[in-house]
Image 1 (cartoon, one colour):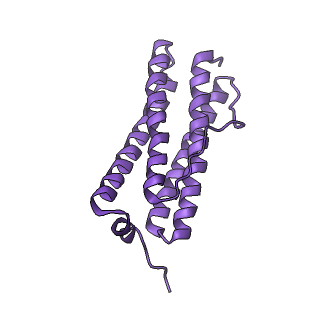
Image 2 (cartoon, rainbow, N blue to C red; image 1 turned 90 degrees about the vertical axis):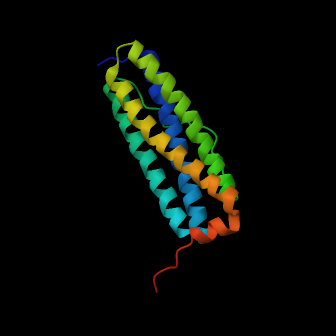
Length: 159
């Protein structure tokens, strides 16, 4: 089925965002694990895998619409050095994604591509949950300070 070029561009742009997020979140998870923040690392790693599921869904849709998924580009990967910087960097990825998804939904609905719009709406719901989580964590860090916050995300390894 031949897809609309503007819809395909939105799908590919969101695919690029998901591929970027996979890399950024996975790197942050590995850094968190290295710092001993194991509970946080598990959560961040799971977020990376969620982004991978989004990338798979977008890839399938692009191929269905006779497009070519672009796996050769990434947006800028933002790497935080502290837990606050990591959350701020990840939040920025989500803010940009939410804006793109909302614009894409409008275009897709206007062109009658309800399936692509529904895919974007499903991803949007996940991204809104993630940004809510990040906002909550940043609020906790502001209230508790980084050292006390970090004390809450450490998990002792099994002996």
